[in-house]
Image 1 (tube, rainbow, N blue to C red):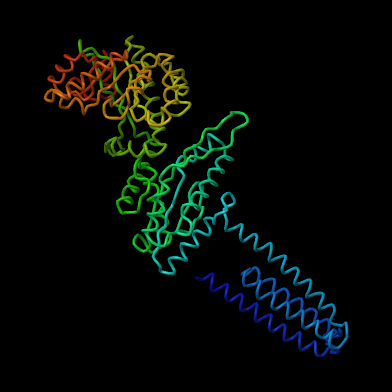
Image 2 (image 1 turned 180 degrees about the vertical axis):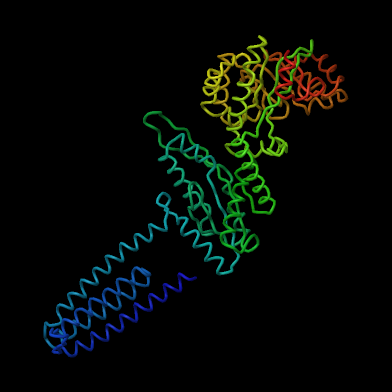
Length: 547
C-alpha cells in the first residue's frame, strides 16, 4: 500500500511539473523577442524556452521509471502538446525560430519511446519465469497480498514435481528444463481459465482458484502421472519415457490464515505432507499437518545435534542357533542419550530421518561404529561372529553404496564374511535394479544380506526369487501368536520352508517365551532373536557374552 501511495505522489508531481513548465514555455513563446539578464549575461527568451522544453521532456521520461504504463500515456500526451506548441508558431507566423524546440521535442519523443520499450521488456522479464514463460515468484507474492487485500475468498495450491532433483541428476539440466516446460503446459491445459498459474521456485508451481470446489475438481485431474518422452541422447542412446508425478498442497483464505506470509507457509506445509505421503498426493492444510511438520523439524534438529555431539551409541541384540543355543552374532541397534541422561527412543527420530536424507548419515554412523567396535573383538576371539547392521531403503538404493561398504571394510580391516546387511521389503519398492546390483556386489566379497521384517511387506515370490540373500527374518508380528494360532503356525512353517528352498537360513525375531521356541524348533527354524534368550546389550556386555 505504501508503494502504491508513493507511486501516485510521484506521478502527480511529474504531471504538475510538466504543466508548470508548459505554462512557462507558452508564456515565453509569446515573447520570442524577450531577453533575460543574469548579471552581465544576456539570455535570449528562445534559449530559456529550449531549456524548459528539455526539462519538460525529462519529467516525461522520469514518468516511465515511476510507472511505465501510466508514464507512456501521460508522456505521449504531454510531449505531443509540447511538440504542437512549437509547430503551430512555425505554421502560423512562418518563422523557423521554434524549429530547435520542435527537433528537441521529436528527439525527446523518440528517446521516451525507446526507454519505455526497454523498461517494459525489463519489467516483463522481471515478472516472468524464463523457462516456462509463467509469472514468477515475485509476481506470485504480489498476487497473494493483492488478493488478501481484496478480502475475496480464494484457494492457494502449491504443486511440485516429485523427484525432480533425481531427474535433473540423471538426465541433465536441459532435460530437467524440458520437464518443467511440459509440466507448465499440462497445468495450463488442465486448469485453463479456472485458475491463475505461477512458477515460483525450482520445480514448484502455484495456482490461485476462486473457490475450493473448483480447486478440487481441477487438481484431481493432475494426480495421474504423465509420461513425458525426452529426446534421445547422442551418447547414451534412447531415453525411456519419464513418468512425472505431482504433489499438491492447498491452503484456504480466509479459513487457514488472513496473513499473506502465513498463508504461503501453510500451503507449503500441506505440500510437504503430500510429498511424504504414499497415497494422499493432494493435502489441504489442517492444524494436524502443522503439528506433524513441527515434530518433523524437531526430530531432524535432534538428529543433527546428536550426530554433532555424539549422543548416539549402539546396543547389540544377540542371535542364537535354535538347535544348540550357540551364539551366532548380534544385530546392532542405535540408541540416543542426551547429556542430562535422557534416553531418546529410536521411534522418535528414525521415521523423521527416513523422510529426509538424514537417514543416510545415521546408516553411515551405525555401519562405521559397528565395524570399528567389533573388529578387535572378532580378531581377539578368533570366532566368526556375525555383526548385522540395518540399512534403510534409501541407503541401499544409492548407486555407490556397495563401493562405500567396501571402502569401510578396507579402512577398518573388518572381515567381510562377518558383516551382514539387513534390508526391508520396502527397499524393493523403488530402484530395484540398483538394490540388486548393490547386493550382488556385496555378496561377491563375502558380505551376507538379510531380508528383515519378512511377512509384513508386499514382496512377491517372483521378486523374492531374484534377491541374492542369505537370510530371511520372520517378523515379530507373526511370532506373537504362534503358539495359539494354527493359521499363523502354518504361515510361519511356509515361510521357513520357502527360505530353505531358496537356500536361505531363517531367523525368527521377537521370540519371548519357551513355547514359541518349541514351535519354531518343530518347524526347523535356524536361528532365534528375542528377549527369551537375550535382550539388547551394551557393547561391554556383548563382548562378555562372546567369551
